[in-house]
Length: 272
Ligand code: BTN
Image 1 (tube, rainbow, N blue to C red):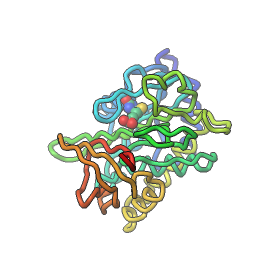
Image 2 (image 1 turned 120 degrees about the vertical axis):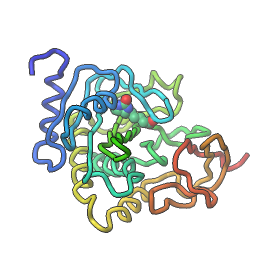
Image 3 (image 1 turned 90 degrees about the vertical axis):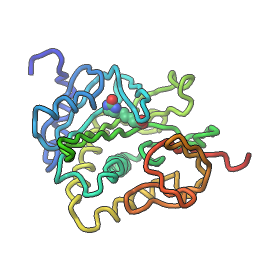
Image 4 (image 1 turned 180 degrees about the vertical axis):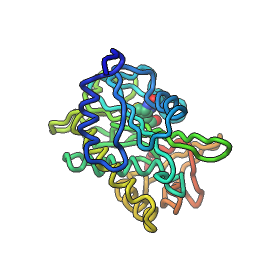
């Protein structure tokens, strides 16, 4: 690879991380792209590869859920993975829980205790409490985008952003932002990438097992800070506050008996 748009350093990290994996064997590392999800969506059209990983040192137009943007700093991890049937679970709603559990399990081997805010936020604990985010800081997020061809699911793009270096300077704009740099651990992109891909590979290897959905939901539930709390839900133009009771068999959140499939769910104050 001689083209200057590619990053030899990050490619080496990626190749090392993929060595010996079953489902993720190929990938590309750029110096800079707008969004790795956009790049993966573009590559998906021209290749049928399964488990292809797209990563970059810099991302200039990172996208989050609900049309939000995703900020990254040098040294953070951003990547998007192209997965296709049969790696996609029968219930595609479970797809975003897979990276959440994989990241939590992968990073736990590095000493990080990741908590999840349903559906796609990755949190760590912090000493300071914020009204709407309690004593958590968001260190990562997941953006899953599905590609349909003739009404049939052709691929899913799993986008992962993980803040590894300090994001102190972003606190004014985003008070709940955090990063793994807050933890007394010697972490870097290479180590995180390796553990996350290893863990993703293991989970995707069991996707066709009969108990996969049940086990995945149980694993997510043990990490989920949303469950059991009073939450404010904004979905389909409706806004209400209720008690997050459980995850149903599709991985959707049940709040006061209502099934929430999408939208924004934040922690609500427990007293007015
Ligand atoms: C969220 O929290 O709203 C999801 C954030 C997802 C960000 C990642 S970074 C890699 C990939 N490329 C993107 O443009 N977005 C995802």
